[in-house]
Image (tube, rainbow, N blue to C red; front, side, top):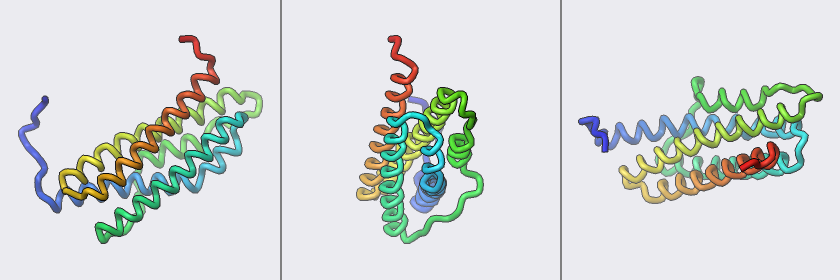
Length: 169
């Protein structure tokens, strides 16, 4: 195990860090909720449309959980102006919209949505760990549920991409 020689142990600093990352992912999820319909409209694959619908349902569930977390912490979401996840979502929404090359459009959508889910997985994992350290048992469980949904969504988009490209393994 690598030791940094320091540990963040101050409760208030940990709570501040937790809220900082929760806000970043919350803002990205709001952007995703607002824009997934536009992404769905551009895909040529019915299975990808259905996966985007499933993702949208999960995004709404995750936002509800995060709203509950904010309430438990007596806090409220704040608008993030420098959210890397939002940039990835924008890239997924601003794909190459060329009707002659559906395969590129569809793969671009699948790639960017998988990137978003990977950011979600890392974020939820860290939020879950911080909640555990702070002994926020209920919040830790909510973050685990969000993590599990993102993991399933990532697997779904990967499976679609693999099938779309033709599984050669």
